[in-house]
Length: 319
Image (tube, rainbow, N blue to C red; front, side):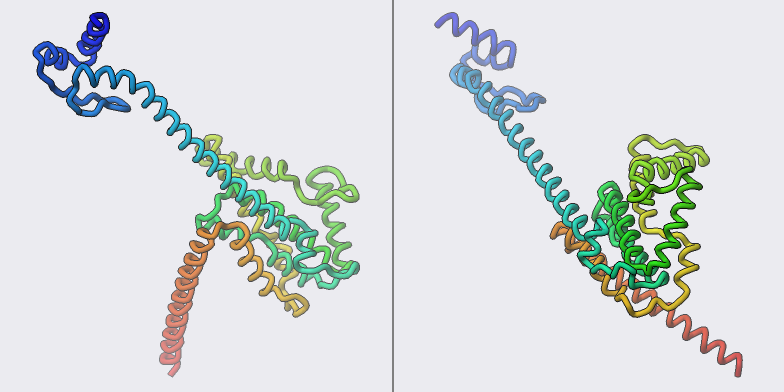
C-alpha cells in the first residue's frame, strides 16, 4: 500500500503540482486546462479518481483510435462506392453512344450502299459530336478529366457512324483523302481494318505539346497537374470542333428531310444528363438550363427591341 501511495504521489507531482500541494494539505482542487488532443475534464481530483483515470485512459485512447478508423473506413467505402457508380454510368453511356456499333443500335443502320448525301452526312456528324459532354463541364457538374476520354471515343464513333450512312461515292472520296492525309502526316498509308483516327496517346501528345509551346511563348511554365488538366480540357474542347473548310464545302445546301437532326440532338442532350449524372446533379443541371434559357430569351427580346427601334429610325429618316 505504501508503495502504491508513493507512486501515486510522484505521478501527481509530475502531472499537476497544485494537486500535489492540495493532497498534502488534505484539500481538493482542479487541474488547469491543458492543450492536448484529449484534455482531462475539470472535475475534482482525489487519490481515488487518479487511480481510476490512470486505469481508464488507455481504454479511452484505444476507443478513440477505433472511432477514427471506423470514420476513415466509412469515408473510403463511400468514396469507392461513388467511383463504382461513376464508372457504371460511364459504361452505360459508352454502351449507348461511345462506339459505332452502339450508334447503329441507337439510331439505326443504313443500307450497305448508304442512304445519306455528303451534306446530310456532314450534318449528322455535327449533331453527334459530344457537345452535350462539354456542356456538363461548362455547368460545373463533371470534371474535364472524366469527360475527355468519353468525348474522344464519341467523336470517333460519330465520324465512323456518319460515314457508314453516306452514299458509297462519298465514302470512296473520304477514303482517298484519309490515305493522303496519313501519308502526309505519318509517312504511311492506312492498312485495311485500321482506324484513320489518332490514338489516345497520339492525341494526348499532340495537345500537351501545343499547350507547352503556348505557355513557353508567354514566358510561363505549368506544373504537372496544371498541364494535365489543361490537356484534358483541350481534348474535350477539340472533340466538339470541326474542320471549317469541310463545313463550308458540304453544309451550304439544304440538309434534307431524310434524318431528323433535332430529335437526335434532343435525345443526346437528355440522355447524357440522365446517364452520366447522379439524381442530385440532374436536378442542378435542369435548374441551370432553365436559367440559361431565360437569359437567352431576354437577350433575344433585347435584340428584337433594338432591331425594331433601328427600323423605326430608318423609316423615319426615309420619310
